[in-house]
Length: 325
Length: 122
Image (cartoon, rainbow over all chains, first blue to last red; front, top):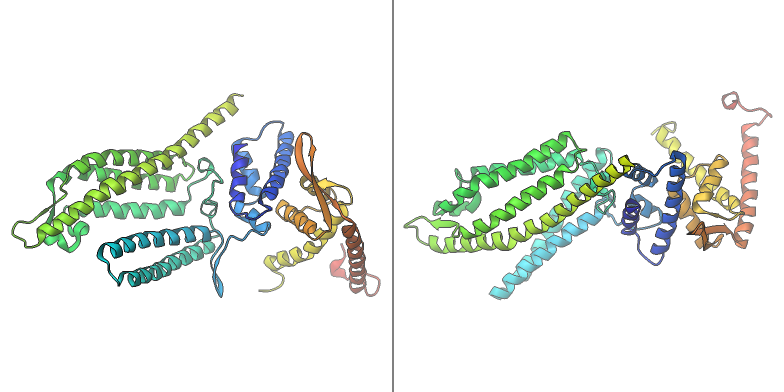
């Protein structure tokens, strides 16, 4: 009954207060009774997809919690602009942005003792609030017009588990567009270094050591595009997403070490005044981005993707056991 | 939106049912039930209630003092049993009087000359 536990956990994330445990215990008992009756009708235990269907027929976790009076929060200005399904994600993104801004501006203020920095920080959090809010309002509006928020996004909790979720087509095409743009950006860097170093491209060149990483990185990006394209056609191949991402992130992590050894990443064009200082800054930023940023990111993603792949494997094993019995 | 569209009908039907469900749940709980068996009992009498409506309704009626509940073991599992409280019995009696009054009035409105209008005859 892992699925039932996941469902109750998902409902519980929206419930607060002293009645939370009591509500969940009662809900569990009523659902167990419904499951037992269904199993008695069929004369066998329910399969996981059947159990998932029964639980979803009871209601999505956010809706069930809402019936018990749970407040998920909304963003309302005259009319509801961000619904309860998106509101928790909206808050997380907003707070995440603010925390990053606070760290960056705090670091700059401390290192420079700059009195303008607090005002810059306030300015940036207002701008971030406006941008993030507008984006979520548009997404919420589009989702409602296209027939409601998909359960996979509405329930950012653990239900349904990823191995039982179809990958929504909108997620595949929007992700595909992002991966294509990233691939094109990377592919054009040798022709237009300005895409990587901006206006410094006049007096800064990418070091030749990068040539060896150009194709491996491009192939990884194209693998991401291919996965999105396949999942757009076959949203039921939900295992493809974690498997591909696990592969991509593992190879990317393996590339970080030789990349970090390829230092320096940028060289100054001879005879350009001030280019050395810019190159030093770019090399330092590049090294920290690679070692501290990308390696931690890839490692954490490998953990997440590995866990999701394990869930798929366990699900397949359980299915085989059910079939053999 | 014209009143005969399905959306309007659904909303009006929900409004009509809401009060009736409370009366039905209170009446059925003159005998003790836990959530699932109460839903089954109501369905057996022809009144289907969505689980997501019934279970929160029970908690609300209990918080209003119309029901009492206790956790008890049955078939080696803990279940929460509900039954009508003394206040609930009094309220149910009053609600039934009210409902019968409304029902009689509706009957009189619909059959002014002792016969149903042709459109409402089955």
